[in-house]
Image (cartoon, rainbow over all chains, first blue to last red; front, side, top):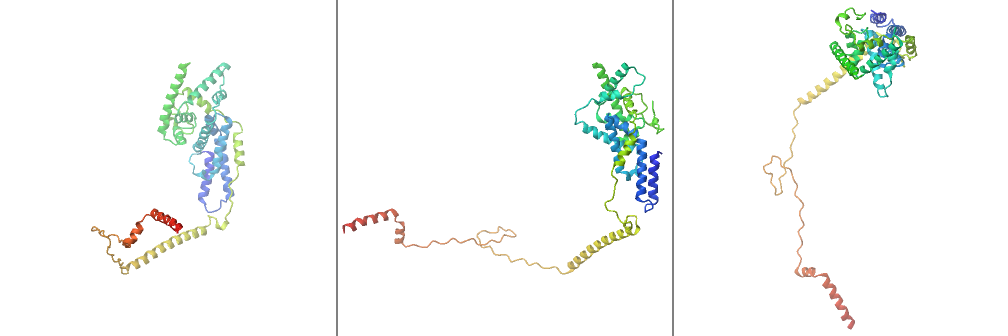
Length: 201
Length: 172
């Protein structure tokens, strides 16, 4: 059990043991704040990575993480009812970034793929190799953007080591078998797209 | 190959993480492993602290708060009173209606059927509509033969006769 879950469970237990009084509003608010702070410390990094993988922009990803925690703050009364805070938070930030991405599509496309490829870590490579790797990553990401949304989303979430297929299913609110079948389709589609691009060169 | 560090069973139950990485997954994993920027947590804490706290515009007095037992009892009693009163009201209305129904039924006298005066018949209809006699046309009055001739005399001839009389009067 994680730290935040222990804190949140403690608040819930205290409240259920003595619901009539004893715990005054201020004390309860302080405890909720502490639980929220623990959630921020524990999961802000993971949420940032999820947001960054979709938005591919540091500032936008940070904004999305902040918005996610602001939403949690608004609904902090329900923190005690959440079973798995990690998956719950990832689902919140996932919905936020998808919404932002949808709205951003109305604006002209930016060259974010090439920017992202330059940001990716490439230790121990020469300058030429780094340039080639950056070009390869940009090419792969451009192909990924051509996938249907459902397949693309599953593929992106599957890249996070913290998420199992069950948890991906929870985030996307689909069944685990759907996750597997979508991932299978996504891999086949990507292989076809990459082969096609390679043959064109 | 990687497995989910939080779920030891995940490597057995999921094929998501237990596969050879394709170039796409390698790229995505690189993105997923990017470190969060420095001070992200602090910025989120600052943003949360800057948010306005939920405050009550009207604070209930301590005695009237939901935690107090007598308030709950009073609310429950009020609900029971309203429900029972409504039920009693319905019951008494239904009872008075039944009392009225026990009285002998009123006889409704149908109005006598008016005999039809027109030339048309009912054609065996059960309830022919009651119709009124239509307006009578006025009979034309009889005129004598002399008057009738005068009436028939054309206006132009009468005028010419009048003109003829004038020269005779001038000769006189």
